[in-house]
Image (cartoon, rainbow, N blue to C red; front, side, top):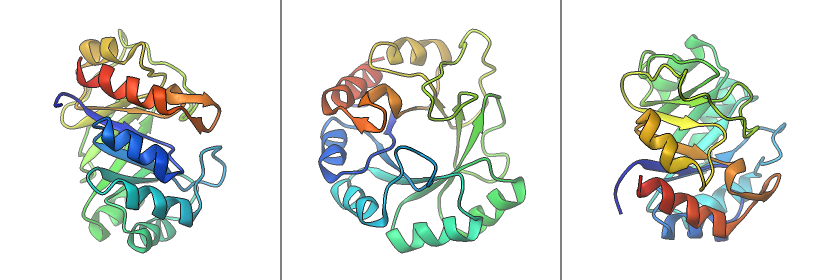
Length: 196
């Protein structure tokens, strides 16, 4: 199965990671931010990474210091560091220290790769809220970028058709309740995104 790059974010169990990978997701996201309802412990992060060797493992951070974020990637053996709300200087430090860094921008368009990051993730104004974009008003960036915010199995194919992102990212849109993933919705999301 080819098509758009798909990341399932906010995973905390090996079982959910295996479902995502078996459904042909390209990446799994592990949140290491203490204020998130999807925050994973180191042990949970290692379980997810271990169960998803054929997909990119992405550590998502917004409230760690940049040094702690870089150290977490190295400690856990994740493939990618995804930074939310960090200064340009912090992003550049991470890019200098790690092979793969993604940068998230909330609520506004930005230039993908402008700070040396591999990809740009465009999230809604309130990341992790499930708030949807007005795709008609979205200024799509050049380069490699992922669309996030308010996506679900029901709307991802249309969002891909409208915005033409390189990739899509989902968390709340594949949950049965806040912070609890639905394996059925994970499968349905990947299928819908890849068929777009």
